[in-house]
Length: 153
Image 1 (spheres, rainbow, N blue to C red):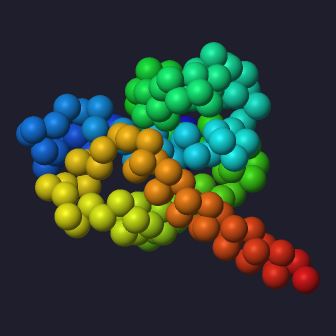
Image 2 (cartoon, rainbow, N blue to C red):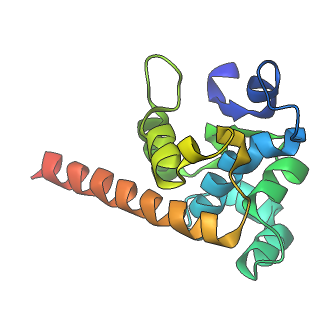
């Protein structure tokens, strides 16, 4: 199901990928989003069950979300990796007519100041970077949740 693919490493490494980086750097943004979704309990139960050991390591910061995307998720993000609420939020957050990354990309670029880096892919896969972007993901998720409540009232 191609429409299920949200993001994939090859989309980033096919052209204009920085020569000084390895392809795993194309997974940093996906990994940070996946890690945040895991912490928020937005993963599909089957995915969470299959990744029990990896998610335990993620919780203790032995590995990062990028490690999971690289080693266990086929170097991609699929909508089906998320539960119903996770799918709805992800579809909303990534929605964009042009590039398919929507507010997610805007928040990532702005929060992590990629304009000061050699490229978008030079974001450090560090705990500090994750913490910064996770806080922004929390804000976006809260706004989205609030907008749903307003629609229902």
